[in-house]
Length: 101
Image 1: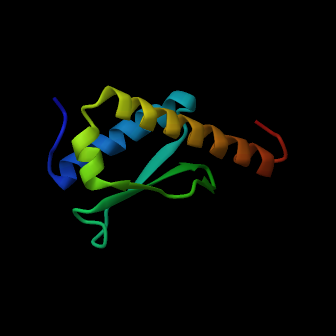
Image 2: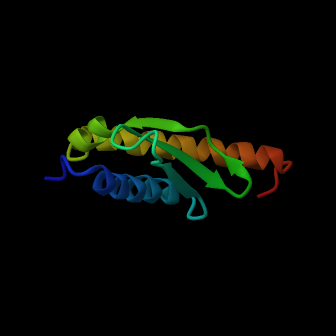
């Protein structure tokens, strides 16, 4: 149903997908998706941003995303990974802020 697609089409889907699952944890979290020339047609680099806090980059292979975005099991695992990364980013930011919310 959603498998395949051009690099740009898959990038839009991925940005929306990651954002939806990160924002499920906290609506203030933003997704930054790297798609520059070095990555074009090959991969994506995703980072989460919450204020000044930025997560490590999550490397995603274009072909893997394109081939599996129609797979419930694969999407479920990626969604869980994004929610876990979001929680870790929020916890790190709270620690840096001295425990303030």
